[in-house]
Length: 69
Image (tube, rainbow, N blue to C red; front, side, top):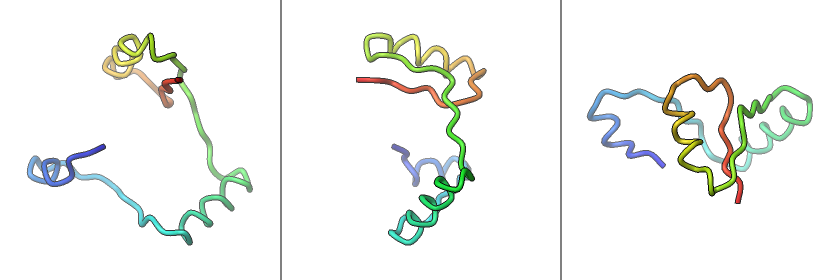
């Protein structure tokens, strides 16, 4: 979740793609063809959420940090 107006006021720039069924279909085709890569750095159960937060906060994460239920 992002406060887009707040980010804009602070001069933060970001990229957002259109969210349509057509765009989703394009992304599915790209995924199926092996054109997208998901890189998971580490997975944490919810009981270790503070540890996951510290890892992300350290700024040395190369992939996604995943929280599992």
